[in-house]
Image (cartoon, rainbow, N blue to C red; front, top):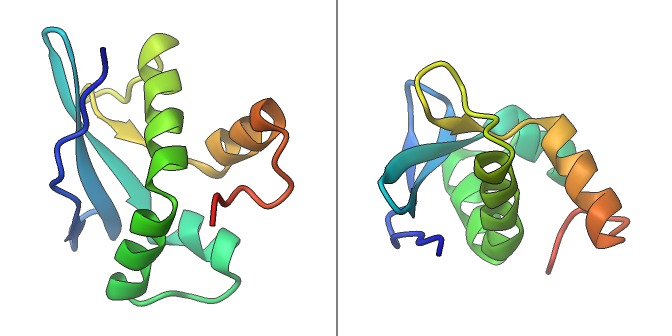
Length: 102
């Protein structure tokens, strides 16, 4: 069973919201880049706006991360960086037009 600690924060080095994911022995970090959020919001968001959007749509972003782990699509460092492609795939699979849960 997947676990997502309540540890979301802004990561300046990645220019992304960062949060944890655990499944059995696997423990990694998920990065949701500002540029991906910009594609959803329509403007370049501030770090605090990115965190707010993450919290409003947390379940969707966690489901995207779960799917990446299930498919074993991890980055070279064994973490996950959510992409626009991930969002589009999520929208198609969930039947959502907006990609947001609101």
